[in-house]
Length: 341
Ligand code: UD1
Image 1 (cartoon, rainbow, N blue to C red):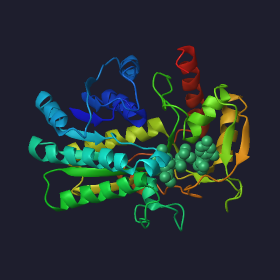
Image 2: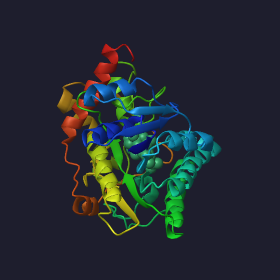
Image 3: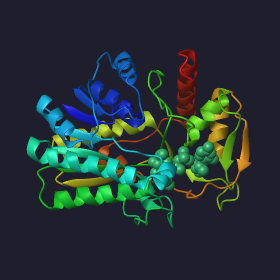
């Protein structure tokens, strides 16, 4: 059985679907702080299987320990449970350090005594900061974090490394995500941020459907080919599939290495404006936008060299961006049909 922390969240829920499709039984722990119990229905509608679910906070050691008592068959963990808004982390750093680090430490402590074989950790390209050279490989320098959120990812990677180097009886695969976008093509699950979206695609689709008046495009004077920031937008289902491969790798001892790090991106940098154009041409829907000031803390350009993941995991993120934009739009429309947004 695989424990998926934060499994009702955006990337977590898509990963639960892929795990179940691959035959893994799943138990989710989630405090529902940024997600909803209805996600379990969506997962069940896609896979025909309702994952086990425990509503609890991973920073609560008694809850985590109780979960392992209840599900002694847990062999692997994927840790998605974390706070992830860059801006909020600047306002509430303690919340970010507490949530993200205590969760990880509680899991690592339990793993050691529960016979869990490995943990997949959700890291981020934010660890590379503003890279001197693109695309970034796993060997690219780790720059000083620009936000407490980013710092929690760097510290988490260090904690895992230290614990494993100290002889912990388990493995870890650290996955550095670039910019996950889109939704499951069934539109049964997708991204559902609370309040006003901070990230580009939810804001864009909410604008396209009329919830927001216009999208602010943050900066058009960057030193890039068209002046807009460049990111590596990766389809969330492609991303989810990499987790299944990582889990299998840990559980079957496919690799000697006790700790491995992979970039998960497409290898293609797309500017914010190119993404808007891709959305419009894929859906036929116009997105009202205005050019606004640069957003503080934004990185100018970052995209992945995913060669290592491609070769070692036998995995590639190859969903065309137009398909991803259509899935994001279908999900937004489904939320409207259901009267959610
Ligand atoms: C940030 C984090 C990343 C984190 C992710 C999840 C950094 C460097 N990156 O990604 O680690 O995992 O959030 O929350 O800390 N944009 C607009 N208008 C909008 C929204 C965004 O123009 O309304 C632009 C941004 O300026 C940026 C791009 O779209 O250039 C992507 O922004 P966003 O979706 O927020 O993700 P990141 O900031 O790249």
